[in-house]
Length: 126
Image 1 (spheres, rainbow, N blue to C red):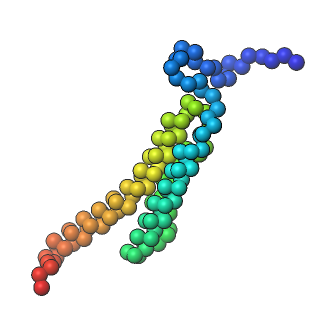
Image 2: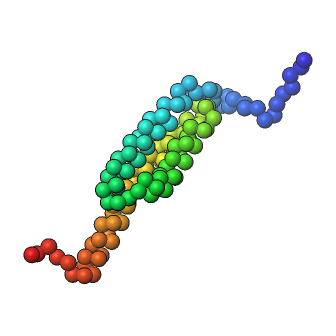
């Protein structure tokens, strides 16, 4: 049996000697697992805080669809050293979006409250 050269196979770039060879990454799971834990803790915290204002778990799940998709894509990338930056970027951006969701929603609620308060002339004097 003879083996034929495959033009679509991965060819190692020998011109960049300072960069590690693009081979299997033994620690590919570290960044996605840490970011998954941070995403779960963020969702748990947001659900516990937002349940006090009447938010349902369905609303929290709706807002966490994009962060879960980003962190999930970091798990599904091929386990190569060359894709470590892409894997880290996807997972970190997913956690960043998840952490900013609650802040943006809280700021929006505060702006709406202040606009209504100014519109109706509410004050804290007694």
